[in-house]
Length: 195
Length: 195
DNA sequence: TTAACTTATTGACTTAAGTTAAGAAAAGCG
DNA sequence: CGCTTTTCTTAACTTAAGTCAATAAGTTAA
Image (cartoon, rainbow over all chains, first blue to last red; front, side):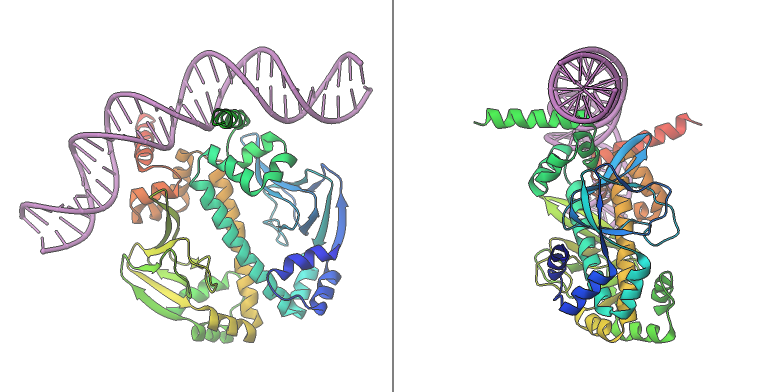
């Protein structure tokens, strides 16, 4: 099971046997049933996650409506915004499938960072990588219209569309479910008429 | 001049005199005239920046149109996506005002990280902070319409609106300049009619 | 298997952003 | 200072997303 994490981390640096053991020591695995809420609005967070299998969705309520912030699937890191802080969470984390996670907590993590600076170095590199990816996604979103955003999602994360209900996809794309329904229909027509 | 950086870093951890010296050693200051291009599309990047005074804009071209990605002002860190990597930049960095920057490069930075793990620790913490801020901004953007986005910018970064031309603000808000012009007019009317 | 509930689609209508084009205002420069 | 260039505004029109409401399709559980 640890193989997945090591493989992920190996993209960023050489993971020695020692480092591998350190990681194994400082984290643990956990299974969650579909529908499990990992974090609720208003609550503190003392866990961050690495998705081994399944899907986590972050969402919150705005004007009474559920807004999906992000979908996290295999090989993704989920660090709640208030992880290890004393501030309440502004959003929910929910397993939208049966999910297997690798879990860490700030106390052990900080101890490990103290002991093994290489581990913190790795975290820094990964954090910077995530910043870059976020900026790319944000820019893509900003410079696209809803139809283009849907096509982009279809291209870059096709399985998300299979795994999450459409009303969740819609708010993830910043539109209403009715609009997503229409966009799909419009695209179907375009496909057919171009045959 | 270094005071600004130290003050900024002090938000995240205690900056000892030693650490202060380390930072002073590993970076330098530089002045740029308005209009200076710090990084061009297609080029490599060997510098990251901390804005002491002035404003940097990142932008790129999509379908022949300039799209503003971000504005960086006083006390903000600018790390190009390809900083220290061997990949070409996808965007431009331009000083839209006379600007004073604190500049670092990856070679010295990595040396310093090796020598002073506390410095890398600080970088990790700041990087994670930036991730959280990005996610908040992205979510705000996604769940707002153009008018709300403009009002949000007016509230959170009013000086940007003074400092950048409107067509740049427009693309930053993901809309056309004509639309921003109309939004402003509409808001003026609302203001007046509510007196 | 049906009944209850959730999710998705469709239609009619409203609203606002995009597009194109023209002119006004402001900024930059010789 | 006046001329040029850039930026901003306005208008008319098109297009697509939001809204509201009804119905259809799919899911879940008694």
